[in-house]
Length: 337
Image 1 (cartoon, rainbow, N blue to C red):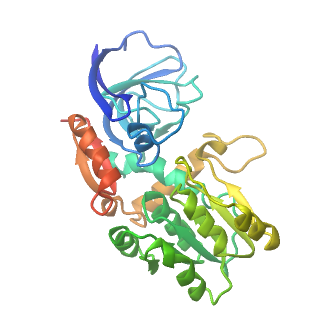
Image 2 (spheres, helix red, strand yellow):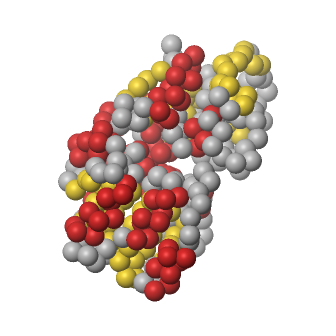
Image 3 (cartoon, rainbow, N blue to C red):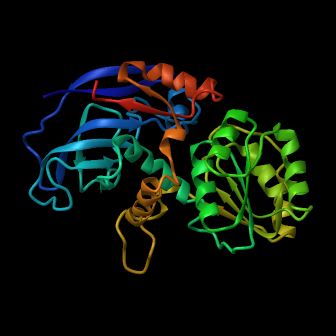
């Protein structure tokens, strides 16, 4: 049959192309899925569309947050049935075949029937945010500073708040700070980056924060994160630095050394989808937790979604997310129209 897919041919060249797919000859571990909603990743996708990632190759099939309906399945697939609504790591496209034997597309998550496809499309981003808390030793009396009140930062702030710790959100874009406050994050600093360290130190009585998370992926922010980290603090790199940045790293390294700061990398793919022997952490378990928070409206996705576009308008959505951050927050792609 004919399907349609979004393809990034090169930097700033995004096309919507028709392709062929053989949905009638499924392998035992494959699932044929019709897309309903997909979500644009404002980090990974924008880095490819605008050529920010050094050494990136093209063409690229962007996207990894897709909710769809199961239309067919192989003989060895037993965790979902035809007609189920599921979340996968598939790229933007009208249809796709989930390969249960593929390392990249190992997520096949049956959506809680109490959740809408829009909510389901946000679960992957919510899971990524969980990586900013899972590897950290958190105590109830800790102070946590989170740089970046985009999707990841606000979701992460909600998780930390659920644990009862003091949370300070930081972002220079007032609109994002307003969204964070509407989600119950009481202390949010909307200020120029040059003033952030001073304001954080004032709020922490010059002690600094016990846990500091960079949810921006901006290298200069990592420097500020180290600057405001308290003695014996933990600094989590949740964002992925991609752009070149030249600086003198000695003051930062000296601070890490002298204050015994632990720097933690928090890549999304560090935990398996299914639980494995010797580990209590899995993506499925995290997604179950996220689903419950969504059902209870502790995570209210309507506060995050600024735009829903059709596939033909992808480039305008990418432009908005890159150049109009005061207006564009989360963008979903509707494949049903």
